[in-house]
Length: 477
Image 1 (cartoon, rainbow, N blue to C red):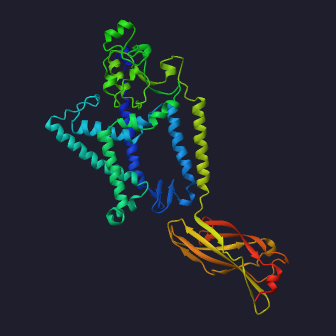
Image 2: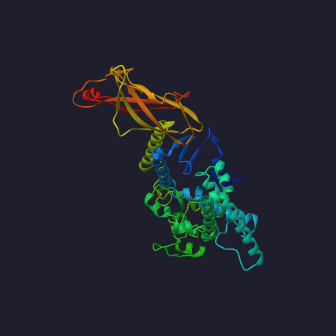
């Protein structure tokens, strides 16, 4: 092979790399809901059981303060990705794009041969032909089946597979779930088969905010006007349709006006017109121009680069600039906060409410006065198995050993996910304080724990024990 041919050897298409990413994303999303560790999922937001599973750790709905941080992490991640690589999320990760490529390129083109070539996305199949009508019906039928799989996969992040299928069988009591499943599947069929890339161009709000995030170093699919020539004028009106017209305007222009970059575009734009909201950075135009120009022994006129490097020719693209570092710092900060908050998860929930009556008194036969304080414990076992619980009272050193647990006297069990109400009575028969004027509140701490798991499943709650004033003690009966 000559040195010239080596220099312009056509590289592997970006399209193939995207297919690998699509396959990885699809396998990951389909398999993730099935991976369970100690009864916990990687991500599950269960409105049915009021649980949040995150990184195989289970949180109660009272701990949903983590969700805002997850959402911020998601949006900042997408925004940061846009600053660096434009709408790379749309072209490489977005489910809408994955579904469309799967339906159009695999089902319609490769399997059913309804479309002639993957490289031509502008010409729609001739539906006047009977055989094409049959193929279209077959394509829609396959799309309907796959839409139900995709809808089920989406719902598995809210209703796990171990509950999802039994719920489907018990359809009389779970018609809401079935309705959502059918509704999501119907929307996917409409979106993928009929709405197509119009969703990206006219409905998706992301395309409207991307221009705010771009700067001159943002990497995107760009047509090199310095080499190819200006096909469009400043008013975005097309000036030339033939190569000889381009060369007549500028003898150094290399664009062949083959229109390959146009016919391959799934969103039906001409990349030579400049930056457009409809561009999803799928790089199909880059592949098309790379093939055409490579056969001529020249590098592609459409490249994945920045305006700073290709259009303005000021130098190399700066990836680690202030804006990018700022997004990176915010993402790292959010992940640290999320990790710290997640690591402080309580393995049981406990609310303590004192009854409306401050205390009760009773005169004992030995002349002592018994003082009781009653509380209502609302406990929830957030683990996946039934456990036995009990508690102890931690009091100041001045009254140590003088306040005891009168009720309950034995451990009690709590099943997973259910709130258990327990009336607790703390008691003393000693004079803890002597005050003629007012009742005295003594700060105490409740240490509640699961028997056999005292080190892991334990919580501390602050409370008070109210001791009556002296005249109440004297009047006790």
